[in-house]
Length: 120
Image 1 (cartoon, helix red, strand yellow):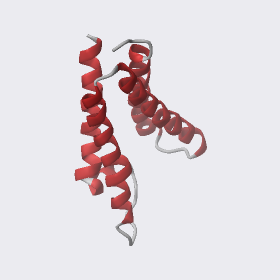
Image 2 (cartoon, rainbow, N blue to C red; image 1 turned 30 degrees about the horizontal axis):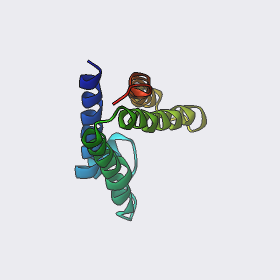
Image 3 (tube, one colour; image 1 turned 120 degrees about the horizontal axis):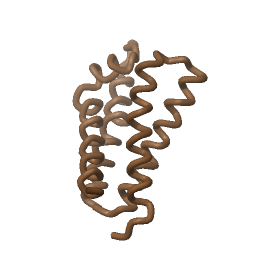
Image 4 (cartoon, rainbow, N blue to C red; image 1 turned 90 degrees about the horizontal axis):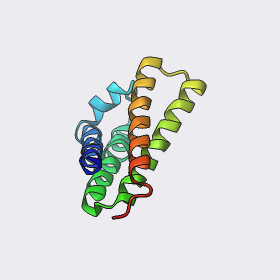
């Protein structure tokens, strides 16, 4: 059961990343990011929202080690922390921020709790 849920979390990570990697303009619009006169924003979407998550998810599957899955949880914990701090400081659309932050938090809790003390 743990292995199956770990793999699902890693595949979701790759899937989330593919949106940013392959469809950066759509992803930016979904995140309420406005276009500018530069294409640097698309580059950032492909890198930080796309490629980073795609490669991390692939690496976790390749390593197939409980600590790798736990570290993926730490990545999601950082994203959730940033998202929830933003709710208080930046006042983004609450429903969207809480939805994305909730997904990140659930993935973080699962991946860390289920894997931190597991032996390979």
